[in-house]
Image (tube, rainbow, N blue to C red; front, side, top):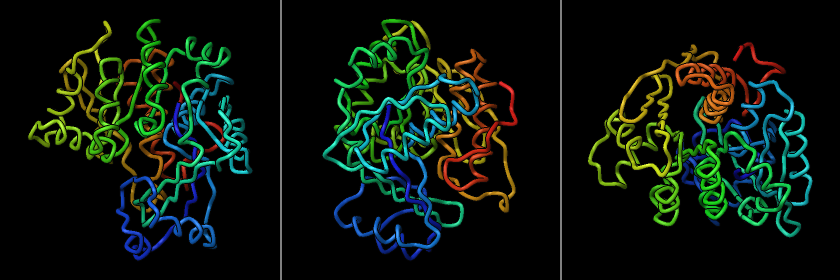
Length: 334
């Protein structure tokens, strides 16, 4: 479950980031001052329109890694417009069953993806994605999918949209023994109290928590832990009391450095695939792809170390392409 977005992606100069007060490697929700950016990017000769949204990216990658028709389902809200149709077609082409809620009054959400060298800055107009309602996932056909899911995953961005859906899905997995996964996703989500409250409320029900080094350190800062030590932060996150019998697994990625994994206070490190700079095309979606590969391994019942290997592989493929896109089949056996 997440925020389906159409990425408006283009390679730009640092001057465009400066013009709209955007930072590389960051993700924000668009303010009124950012609105002209979307039209400006659409006019660029090198612009690409790509199916996006963090959760949707991860689900598409998981489906690609699994190569099993109908293995994944995605829920979120789109508009009754051409962009919404593009997103549905992209999911269907990838084998993902897109069970969208359709808002006839609001356009499909878009994300301005500004690529500077291999870094990117994301600026999102949620639009229809902001209007997802828990009633949609509780419709009988949809709730049957929620109940039957082995794993449910949401990026943290969904906390800005439908906390009720997060609560319903996470509690259902606690009840039926399924796995619930979440991502910290962006520093602002922990810095804005109502969004942070959703994480705090959900954490006891989270079996696998993902994030990168900046997000993990932001969590520690907002908790007053007075440390930037990622292993210590991962340990603290893993030991937040759980409402479930299982122990929480925390996965913190840190670019080309090994991923830090902590289960019940025990830290291990797992290497990623480091590529030469000339092979890097676009880091947009690398973290989403890592999660997608990891979740595919989890579906297969693989141990955490093998899930990390699958995540590292999928991320290494995505960073060599523009946007969160991939070849027809993975050169990887789960």
